[in-house]
Image (cartoon, rainbow, N blue to C red; front, side, top):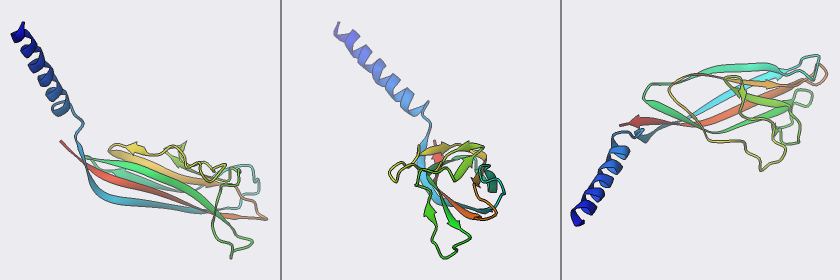
Length: 155
């Protein structure tokens, strides 16, 4: 009876070690902070249609992962250019940031709603884009910011 309990304990310890060290996903080691900026002017005649204003391609190299911590869209009226960029936290849906055509930063309805972050990206190529509303009588300059941390994945 005592030897069977010892065998069960050793089997459990072996399985614990095996599952954590052999089948693990690896350790993350900080590599760098990455910041992506997007900017464009929306001056379309139909102020209810979002247009993509700017896009960039980002790459996550093999052996690395990217953790997107935050994304935000601000806008500035071109009619009153001395007005500072304001977060789109007024309940409107003026500007968006997209990751591969999926919205990751809609206009917030309040200042405490910060979105569903973090977003983890494995190695590969991704598209970031910004869209916004504007009109010919009140063109708006949109500025988007995405902050991320890149990690090395070590076995």
